[in-house]
Length: 117
Image 1: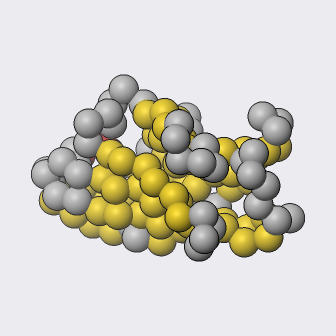
Image 2: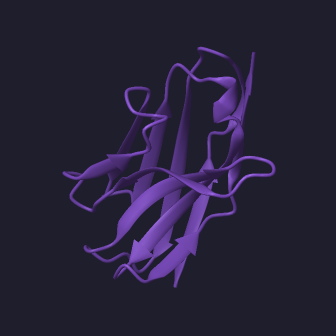
Image 3: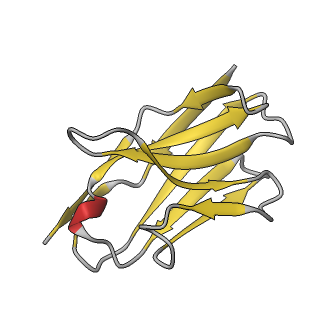
């Protein structure tokens, strides 16, 4: 079983920065991919960024490329999302995800990010 706990959300003005953290506990496999998704009110959950265990491969949504950076510390089983140049449209609940064998998904409870204009 895997547990994911997010932290770091909050209220920030447009142009500001936030850093989200996701601490994973339980059995973490070397093949697991971790990432961040977000869901705004009235919208479907969408991918923000993913990273492989080695950290050598990352993937970003077009809307966040150049502004957000995903990273991970395997010694701490923690994934980070550094968010810069935040925009009001980045407002959403951000969820941490662990995907195993391209089949099983584990989710955190989410952390609210609100960007004021």
